[in-house]
Amino acid sequence: MRRSIALAFLTLLVGLTWARSPEPARDRGQSFAYVPLAVPPWADAEYHLGAFSLDGAWQMASRSYGFGSYSALLAMPDRTLLALSDNGTYLRFTPPGAERGRFETGEIKVGKFRSKEQRDIESAARDPRTGQLWLGLEGSNAVIRLAPGLDVLGKARPRAISRWGSNSGAEAMARLADGRFVLLREAADDWLAKWRHDAVVFEGDPTAGAKSWHFVFDGPAGFSPTDMTQMPDGRLLILMRRLVWPMPQRFAGRLVLADPADIRPGKVWKAREVARIASSLPVDNFEGLAVVPSRDGRLTVWIISDDNFSRLQRTVLWKLSVDPRRLR
Image (cartoon, rainbow, N blue to C red; front, side):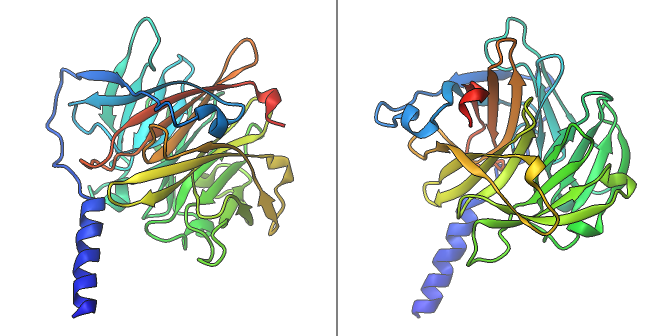
C-alpha cells in the first residue's frame, strides 16, 4: 500500500512539474511586453553575484504563436538577441532599454517531423565572420548548420555525442574564435560524481565531419551546464542550473569561468565559480546566455529562462553587467 501511494504521488508530481499549456494560438499582431520583476530586499543580490551587477529583471510576456521555452541565446550584430526554443521556434528581439524595438518570431525547419526529438534545440553558436549558426539538438543528438537567414545548410549526428542520451545531450555549445567547437553534456557522468560532465571538442565544423576528442568538464556539484559563450578575452563564461524544489518550482544557478586554452584530450577541465544565481532572486529555469561587449570594456550579460510552455514557470530575462578584469 505504501509503495502504491508513493508511486501515485510521484506520478502526480512529475505531471505537475512538466505540465504544458496548450499550444498557443497564432497571433500575427505579435503582442509583446516586458514586466519588471522586483528583487526582494532580503535577497542580497550583491552578496551572491559578486563582481556582477544585476541591472534589471523582467518577465517576458506574449500571446504570439510558439512563444516561450527558450533554451539558447545569441547576441546578434544589430544589438538584438536571438532566442531558440526546444520547440524548433525562434524569437529575435530588442532587449529592454533600446529606443526602437524589434520582435520577430518564426519556425526553423530543423526536422521533417514535429516530434520533440527532431526539434529540441538546446544550444547554439554563431560565426561572427560568416553569420552562420550551429544548433545542438537534444534527443537526436544532432548538430545543424544554418545560413544567416536561418535556412538549414547541413546536419549531422556526430558519433562523439551519439550516446549522450535522449534528455541529457549537448545542452551547451560554443564556437571558439579559432574555429573549434566545444560541447558540454547536460547530465553528469555518474550520480556519485555530480560535478563531472562528458565534453567534446570538434576541431572544426561538426556538420562537416571534423575531428573530435573528449575531455571532462568539472563544475559545481549538482548543477548542469545549460549555455556558454566566449568572452572577448578568450575565456568561456558558462551558465549552470539546478532544480532546487519541485512544488512550487524553485531554481538556482551558477556562472562559472574557464579558459579553453586549458582543455586537454581526456583530461579534467575545471571551471571556477564567479557568481551564484540564488533562488531568493527572481529566477526561473535559466538556460540561455549571451554576452555583449561595451566600448568601455565592460560586458553586458543577458540570461533567459526556459518556461517549458508550463503554467508553473515564466520566461524571465536578466541583464547583468561586469568588468571582466574583476573576473581573475
